[in-house]
Length: 204
Image (cartoon, rainbow, N blue to C red; front, side, top):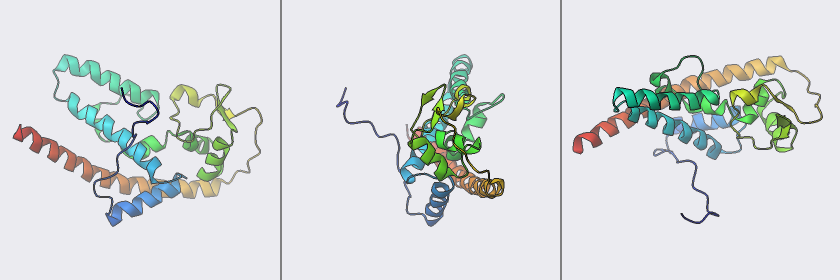
């Protein structure tokens, strides 16, 4: 069972963390999403990597079993708002870490206009000013479900926040640019993972 006091590590560091391109992109994401450190990004990256790994493993199953487990996987991702509409396994394989970062409580607070910046949103969350369904939440990395999002608001007392739309728009443009760059990097990593999996299968 293991020591209950020693929590299991929730993330894995990149194999080639010394790449300048990756370092620059990670810094940009940490800044744009107001993350405390790169560890919070690695948690999101590991979460998406696990989901993509499950999706790849489903492709090797018999059709009936695959359809059943495919629905379970997609429903779990739709529940937290990472996927919407009528997605397929291909959509799961195309996910990037930023899709998980978008569902963090801190980011959702910012996107809903309850804060002017990501850092301000994090401050509101940590200081206990944000609640869901009337319950206070002070964990910036909490994954907000689609059901919870509708009831997300200030906890008890509403804070007066001066709207700064122009800054928000500029920030969104930067985020979109970072997303595009990350998608390219993640796509290259996915190809490397698939190539590695194919090589291991041939050896077996």
